[in-house]
Length: 284
Ligand code: PRT
Ligand code: ZN
Image (cartoon, rainbow, N blue to C red; front, side, top):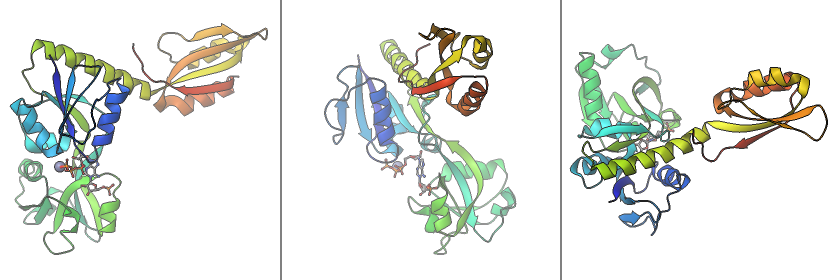
């Protein structure tokens, strides 16, 4: 029994999808230029598809699971479940107005022409806010629509904002925060659910490891109590005696988010020779 995974053939999600599988210890056999590939050391078969088609293929059972942006999942509204947030491909779907205009709220959209590749999500937003507007669906280069007189406003994906800026537009209102997610068909065979659980366990270990750092430091024994109180660790830190009498080496795990704050406090508490190393996998 194998699990069939659909990922983007080429584009913004492709490299991160492949990297995540590699970091999860999954080797992909023959090249990615074909339509399909098989993992050599895990019961996984890969399909390389356009991202827009992935929800449909998962609903139809051509693939069992897929890696795809939430923006695509919700726009396509197929019968698939969002099982796991993968943490890459982050962006937002936002309205953008001409830079000299002021977006005053949903009513600003009333009667306007909106260019977008996301007509379903935009219509949802309009309905929720009881506003009527004219949606023009276009598949690419949405940002040029106001400049050529095709639309008054756009609703498009934004990450750095530089595309909007270069086209004389500014972000006005976000209607969806998006990232790549793992979607699945509702009804997987029990044996496939087991494979999916194994895959998710590996992905979670990789993600946890990325969020944490392994820290080693030296400290005089009379400062140990203070230093230990600053370290969250998974359980309690490891303490090893150094060859120099009265000194110990302390090892622990620190979350990336708290990292600088804790390091500064550790230094002030008397820690020396602090080493910070990346963690490859983290299994709790
Ligand atoms: O060929 P295929 O259909 O598979 O690919 P595609 O061209 O439809 O998609 P692709 O590869 O461009 O994007 C795939 C997915 O990446 C999207 O569905 C999102 O989930 C995610 N993603 C993340 C983005 C962006 N960031 C992003 N910035 N997708 C598109 N953009 C575009 C945006 O449309 C705009 O043109 O980048 C531009 C804005 O970027 P900034 O940095 O200038 O703000
Ligand atoms: Zn696409």
